[in-house]
Length: 338
Image (cartoon, rainbow, N blue to C red; front, top):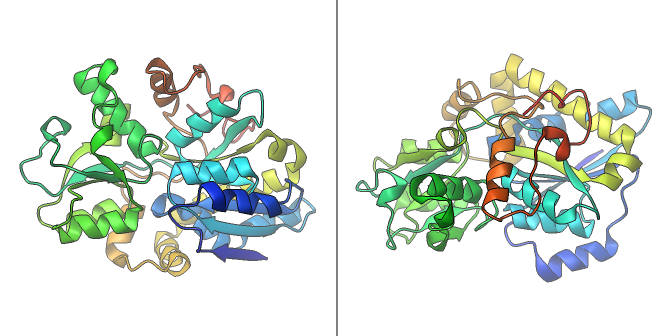
């Protein structure tokens, strides 16, 4: 049985996380609580939920899996939920994954499970005079899911380091604000708020470009990272990996099947996204995102190591990742990634 919870939005941290931890069960076979966020980057999870693929693959492993989906906003909230034991698997950006991987080495030992695919993240501005990040000023406010730690925040730091030097990697942090993607999109489209920029993800960035003639791209994550890259990962603790091997394998099998389904049936996948999320996204725009040449749905990670090594160079994480196996659990479906 799959249950889907929406109340866990935006600011799940602090006291609320502690309260949830008090009743959270330990990782166990046949129980799976997954935290996800907003956007098409989570489409594989949407498809798995709609078609009960995790449950299907669990039965193939000989276990009935009770699946719960919780929706959070921002890597910090997701990481807090994972460390508190409120969830078993986190879905968030590569940046938050490296943060928690570094923080838990020798302890809860969090590592990545799988990629959810390659997606570009666009930094959108609705100020016509802003053409590149070099044009940003104190007048600008850039919305992103979590200040300093989200994948968008980390890519912005990487871009700043390339523009002004690694000693100034956090130069733009002071003009960033935490805001969930749906609210940030509304601000960019309407204008007239303090939000003048949004480091987004699909389909929110495409909505902004389509609905505000002043909205334009000033930076793409693919340009910063040197090509297509996994933007969002699933990750979990060593305990979950060791104590729930059948549930773990069912999850990976479900994601692989979901990726194949999206590739073969993009229109049905678009309908599933709209149904599961309740989003009001234009269907044609959504289908354009799903079938874009820049987007790939797959569980094997791509081009993630470079961001981790950058974070180590600037002191954002203490441990330098040198190969994929440092921060991914072993599995033949992901081990050839990068």
